[in-house]
Length: 80
Image 1 (tube, rainbow, N blue to C red):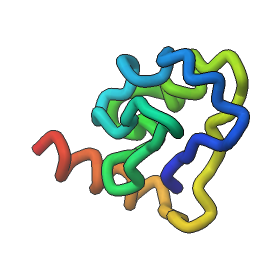
Image 2 (image 1 turned 90 degrees about the horizontal axis):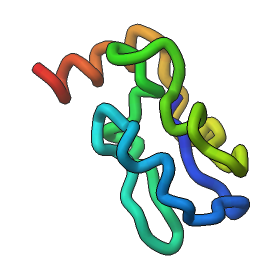
Image 3 (image 1 turned 60 degrees about the horizontal axis):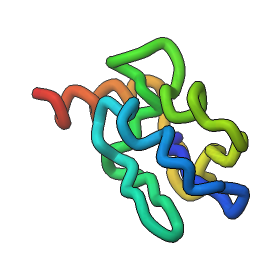
Image 4 (image 1 turned 90 degrees about the vertical axis):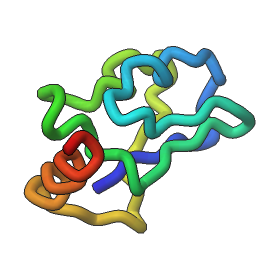
């Protein structure tokens, strides 16, 4: 499942650089591109954006349900 940033975002910018897929766009509001978000499957053990987020505003995107295999395949396409 791709992640999304909710209204609790403080726009601190901490989540942008750690994303291995460059899926996060800074702005108002910050946005995670679900076509690029793999929840860091293929790169890290946990979503790096969530690990650095001070406001816990990064949550699962209910419109993008994906299996671990789907996320790995997406990562492989992005980085292949």
